[in-house]
Image 1 (cartoon, rainbow, N blue to C red):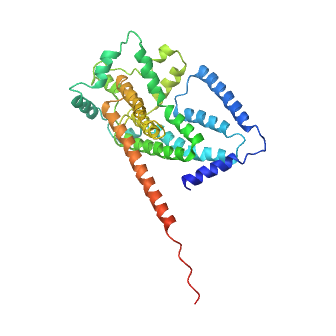
Image 2: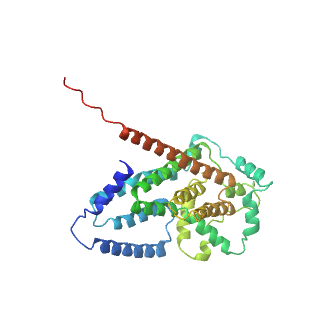
Image 3: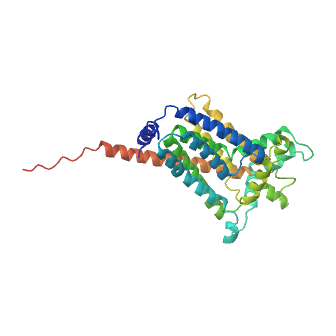
Amino acid sequence: MSSADLARSRAGSEAEPVLHFGHWPAVRRCALALYLVGFVVWSYNYGIPVQRELVIAWVCGALACACIGRHPREMLWLVIDWLPMVIVLGAYDVTRGAADRLGIGVHFHPMIDFDKAVFFGQTPTEWLQNHLYDPTRLTAWNVFFTLVYTSYFITPFALAGWLWARDRPAYLRFAKRIVTLAIAGVITYVLFPAAPPWLAGQEGLLQDVHRTTSEGWKIIGVGTSILFSEGQASVNLVAAVPSLHAAFTMLVALNLWRPIPWRRVRPLVFLYPAAMALTLMATAEHYFFDILLGWLYAGAVMVAWAAWERRRAGLAERRGAEPEPEPASAG
């Protein structure tokens, strides 16, 4: 089905409510408002959700509220469109320990050697923590780094939800890229398990390096710190190359580039992946090597899918332009 067909089918669903009731938009707005209140109350008691599956569940719940009163196929689309993403990201989470079962040793030195070669003999993490981190006090930097780091768990899926509600074909294109990027990351994690800087610090390979990602929650005072720590403890601790934090934030920036109507403003979207890169190095989550590779993965996924979609569109256009064969004459 083409993008135009999908758009028409969605428009058709708007015109086919379940019941003939003239106030469905008001009902949907009320449902979304109540849902938002429920989200705030839940976040106050349990913390802002940071697990991917939980974030996707909240986003899909909001989209389900937006489907109230519309044709039932809207709800079916919601399940079909989001299920592959949930499955792949769930597979990503269970990769913890896969490298150990395959007998592949954890890599510590290639990333350190690369960063030291690029940054004049010292890793960025060591320099940043030496200048910005003080274990005896908390600063605005701690809050900034914690919020930027945590945004990775929310922003891609919030953008996906916005796209699904606004333009389903655009969502499907974005979802394909997220799923492909996650699969590429999973494969790399299994074949090349790599230790992050904080783990290298524990092994004595880096000096005075500590994992400081959650320090900002001590200032903000939100219960997220509990879920955040539990989430960090449950993920693959040697899944550092490439950095999916860097890859996903770059993917978000690349997908926001075209929808922004003002060309002079478009470059500002890259402040997000830049802020994430600074955060990842300053909190000892990733080396610059991991971040650079994550950006390359995101760019490769974008280029590959764009080429495939152009090829499909070209083939469809040529098929549509071919004249139908005339029936053979009876004579």
